Image (cartoon, rainbow, N blue to C red):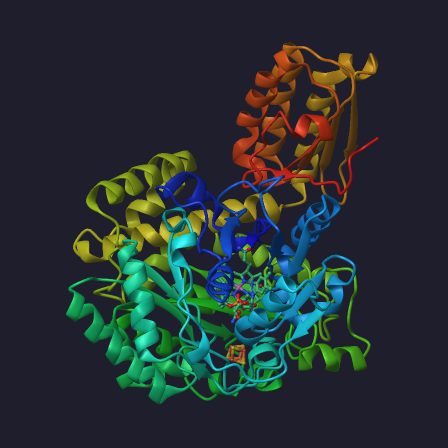
Length: 623
Ligand code: B12
Ligand code: SF4
């Protein structure tokens, strides 16, 4: 049996760190590989031939040699996941859906897939494989019991292109003992953390070591959910690193009470953890109590963060605004805290109600759910929650402003200084070889710092720890994070003035292709609000000049505005293929905002990299 597993492209967000991936880090095209797919591959019968394609780092095959295609996805990937399922199914493939969103909302996949696997796959995927091989798969496989993680096999890391990611993923536990009202983790994985054995972790590390991996993200929901087991793991990791004389640099997610357990922090440090992502959410005690995040109540959160720094471990954090207790003034308090704490990777979101969570249930009862906003990415400028003590529009505007305030050059530099004052000896060393480290610094300077002009140069220079060279890798890393987030915010959380710029840029696209539109060979559809978008369709034959003019004006439109562009190509002479390629080459950098919709016949001869552009996959051949 030939199985193809696909991880659909993520829409761009703060989490994709596009600037870093595209322009600064060598080789990396995405942060993490699809660990769920590698685990699923390991659960297949041994005689199945499995291939994994991650559309975030490579293009999807349009006519793969496969008997079955599995497509995974989080909620944010659902539109692309659905598009891929529809496309492959329309080509006669048998398709199966799974992953985080299918686990939470399997009903959304009705009519999209031949089968849906909802929940952890360790027990139900082998059942599906047997049924599929026997020709009688069911429509839904839903895990209703508790999966023992000791039954989880070593993921097929060999099927992943690990060198295209900035770090590898490894999972020790699932579940979290707490009960935050907005959290879907405890709905999907329960409140009793389940863990793998230390031998299993050792085997996974052996496999990653064999691939030369250095940076590993323990993708646990809360690594310290079961403290005795976490401590055993950490001691094991320290011993593993020493035994193999191999330095992995680890990172993970953990609850804030980690900082209040000195032994745990010490073990973490000894094990080689260089960063930890903490759900701080807010420093407002009333909001924390309201959302039942009781583990964060009753301490000094700023002191907690600084204690982590003092041990050399960096803190990345999640923040939320929009609790019932919050007002517009909450944004100011969040800004003050984030600045003082020096947290660079501050993922701030408006409170979202994910389906099936207690928060969703409560707000539904209170009639406070908005339906228009996608509730799957918690950092978008919108939410499905109707706030209690703020006007919705004012809240969204203030949210965008908060990001803008935090992502000025000055604020990035100031946070670095505020952090480094407390993190005298960071454990983070980058984990790159000398040549790569130099390349990263050079690219950061050339593509990140220099283009920012004198104010950025000054902020950068002021943040350099000239008397503490050990801090340099962390400072460089924080600039890469800060500038990547600022780059995304500039393009996506635009100030109102951007609309005027968009109008000007759209007018120049119009002028560039006017002749072709008048002669009926091309068509241009434009929308400025709510977001600028341009759709250029080619249905008659054009010449080289068309592509040159279109490339120039579209590139500028994409560069200076948050516009999206759709290219619909129904007719193209062979001689024009290379001009189209040249046009796409110029738009590459903005590929996540460019959709390419090729006529069915052209799809076979013009290759479009779907990891760069959104390749539209209409289900059936067009008439
Ligand atoms: C690591 C991680 C990340 C990493 C890396 C993502 C990546 N590329 O892998 C980063 C930090 C980048 C990230 C970002 C985000 N994440 Co995230 N992330 C996780 C985390 C902690 C672990 C995922 C993982 O690797 N698990 C380990 C594997 C083994 O488990 P699994 O994926 O669940 O797979 C199992 C089954 O689902 C099944 N399966 C998986 N795939 C398939 C496919 C088929 C065909 C089948 C049949 C079965 C199947 O088999 C596996 C074995 O049981 C999860 C939490 C969690 N516990 O799942 C959140 C989680 C997946 N993320 C989530 C979200 C929402 C996001 C963000 C949108 C940010 C946010 N919180 O708003 C961003 C978007 C990403 C982007 N690039 O834009 C949500 C998804 C909610 C949902 N139900 O859709 C989760 C569940 C956490 C949460 N509650 O916030 N994330
Ligand atoms: S601590 Fe994190 S994983 Fe645990 S319940 Fe709260 S939000 Fe969910």
